Length: 546
Ligand SMILES: Cc1cc2nc3c(=O)[nH]c(=O)nc-3n(C[C@H](O)[C@H](O)[C@H](O)COP(=O)(O)OP(=O)(O)OC[C@H]3O[C@@H](n4cnc5c(N)ncnc54)[C@H](O)[C@@H]3O)c2cc1C
Image (tube, rainbow, N blue to C red; front, side, top):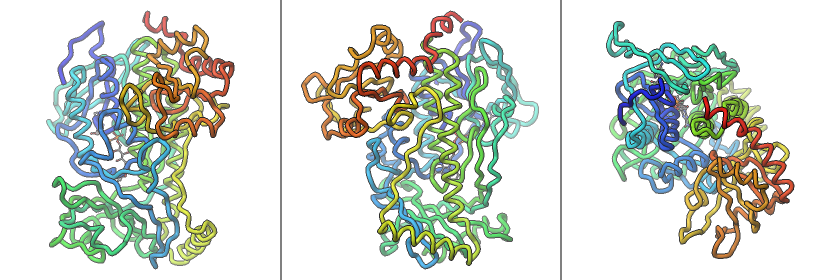
């Protein structure tokens, strides 16, 4: 990462505040398009303790676009099995299908170690010369005007004392990915909507010196023990520190009413809680013991003028669905394609409004879902737990024990056609073949605005103006079919999906979401026009003149 000189009165195109997973990913997605990015991080050293341990198929798809293959990467693991919720007698209450391939072409779930993944992302960022990482600096003030944002930065007083150096930084845009106590959110005067939900849980990150799952006689690898005496989460923690060695594991124990969180996180208490699980200092290392307060809240607005917020700065949720960082990763991608488009003179500033309207609803879905899961497990009362068990076991029996699929979630209103089947949802992905390459669609065709015609020439179905608009977006039109000059849908995955929703055309966005589907050229043209309007494309010439 290089230091940059000032151009046109700007030190940088985008100042990203906070180099957690969300900010670092955003910096990469902007930097690899050639934009100048300054990534400002409060601490000089990397945060070395685990937090997130699992991500979903959509994140695997996003990581794949960076060259990180979740199937083969030694820093990532998976368990080919279901996710169980059991009562105190170890009877099934709920079974979730974390075993299948997802519609987006990856496994439903992967397990990883957050510090390892963050280092991976930081290494990718370090290879992009137009990203500058300012470690040991923190944002303390911002002022925005019509053309940019002036940031006040200061050396982190916790590292250098109160009289540390200060400086300003002039940026065209600012992204606040500065975590739960976001300074950017505060400086923009954006309030949180708080669901008033909180529970304290003890998180124990363990490195067993042996293969823990194999030692447990058929106990699931990933499960929740809904025992009112001590609600407990037992899940993988990603690969261990020694390549090929035993994997990490995580235990989460609910802090019971009347218990002291402080007392519980002492190592002696941690080992007491772990003893029934067969772990002791003789056969395992306690990597981290900390009590976290799980909360459910979101910021009411995620963009204001030339500033945006994303990741924990914009939302917090209990980790029961493993979706907190996932939501932040989606934010980074959603911010990146919009900012790239604006910086390249293709999109108008108004497109940023759809960042808030789309992402806030999507994140709220997962906040509510995580809270619902929490309401199932965070029960410390025997009678209430017995009622819950009876209800859930009856539901499961009525379904003959069929696992529930993972849910499909739609974006809020934004740059997609609401009246078109599957729009606003993640696109389906399958294995394709083209130009002598056989792989997932994203890896063969690429990422961006992709218009697919199923057995039809999608480009000729657009008007001339629309073809120019697609070109302006660096978009591509692809014909899916069986002949040599087409993209061959090897397993028929994409074709079956389009047949099922009675569509011949689909427009996929750079974040892999469906902007529209259509059956006829006339339908395609009218829906395409609406998406282009939502992108604020027509204002691009005046933006470029700014
Ligand atoms: C116990 C636990 C378990 C979890 N499990 C999962 C899981 O399994 N799956 C999942 O998807 N999510 C999970 N999460 C959530 C996930 O860890 C977070 O959502 C994710 O780390 C948020 O990333 P971020 O980049 O938004 O923020 P952070 O990781 O908090 O990064 C923010 C960065 O900004 C820096 N910063 C702050 N203020 C300033 C400033 N003023 N100037 C400069 N820099 C600043 C900070 O130093 C930090 O480096 C879990 C969280 C916890 C606590």
